[in-house]
Length: 142
Image (cartoon, rainbow, N blue to C red; front, side, top):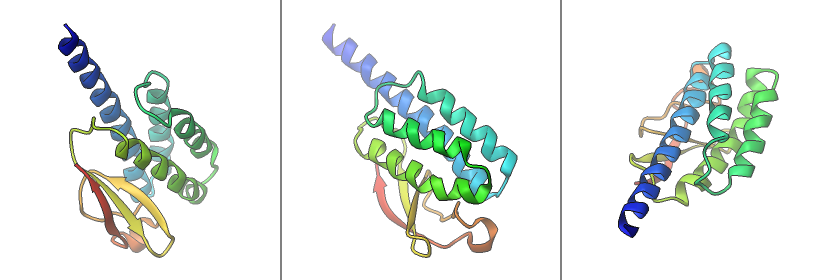
């Protein structure tokens, strides 16, 4: 019985972290594409998973920075806030064992900012097409 409860808890936490990462990646990818409408929609979807998701630490911190991201008026302002979202997400990812796929923590030396990716290929969300491949993989969570 205890094993079943433990496995169910692990499965729920993995599902929560996976949903959170999928919504985060949608924001990141929309920023990479410099698609203002897609960024706005993806931020709303990220906010929607923050409510019911409760099995990860730093939930309050993440909610605060995602809310700042939501009220940022332009794509440049959204990119400025995105680093805070990314560093908080990385703290959550590093602090959990519930990651089913590798997460790449990537770094842009031009702006001294970070983001997460589900692939090792660099697609910089801070510059879009102008410096798409600027960056490197800083850490990997397996």
